[in-house]
Image (cartoon, rainbow, N blue to C red; front, side, top):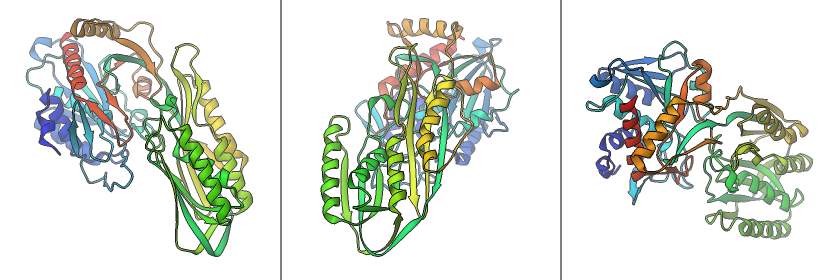
Length: 480
């Protein structure tokens, strides 16, 4: 990691981020980062609790000038999406993120950066470690497993927090305050199928690579390519008389748009395969030339040999289901112009050895719409006899008609930066609505620095925006 990161201003924030990014913290495997936070709290002589859901709460007394003021909850999640670029080998369970500076941006070398939500968590740690900041009593809530279903927030223990105002530091635009977000539900599909074995077949590997991927909530409206869906188009174009599918694997995370997909096939008719694959690949390239300049579609001949594949009828049913499954924007909000109300992302596929598994994440700011889009996603899979199940999901966060913290921070923002801040709801999932189920009545707001391409290996965080974010956070704490 470049020492230059630690020299960035504000140093308190960037040094905490560098320390945090040196610790592996993939979702559902947060033991190392929790140990890091406990050691950090011990060093600062701060109380650190772990609740029954595995979340950490660190408490700090008010600065001398804010004694007697009501406590404020600062909230961020500890885990990060772990995704490496094509061809990059990276052990997210044992390696720290390698960062570098690119102009006004901090990036990672070949992986996700973890600014989502590492910069929010680092800001909280910097506040906890500060000796000269003015602030009321701090209750730092650092949740786990946000990126893989919000299980930490869903299992949050009641009775440990007394604050009535919560600052969520998990937004990604420095000129917007977020006061509402979509809820989500995971749809998990499994399917067993009969196989046909070819004793000696011509085997090929089809690859869709180089897509931008990205956040399945924040970027879903942009029409970015989904590598799994594009593979379905290629296989449909070839047809079951030209290829027999043996393996089909793609996607990297439940909440990331798939950027890469691979299929291994037995080639039954070389001429048709070559012609149809080339035709459809060219059509796809032309469709996505502006949005996906890095798109690569290729096929490689492998050694001839034995291979087990789907039977023709099963393959036809599968490919039709994959073409039909809902992916992308499902409904725009009739209430908020420009806001996606409901969407679906086909996230992962793993098909091989008589069994296929898929996962998809459906989001909506309206509960009934969330159920509807999940049912639409499941429908083609049910038609081919697959088993479909949903997790418990998580609720959205409904904007409040009156919010004292919103009114106060709008005034602070205008005072600091000379213009009004935008106020909106977002289509991404935030933990605020979930936390409010355990702690009802919280006055909540979400804000953060500019972070682009979260959930992809192109994730980057703005240095100048982080300075703006820190100034807003510390000024707000001094006024509460």
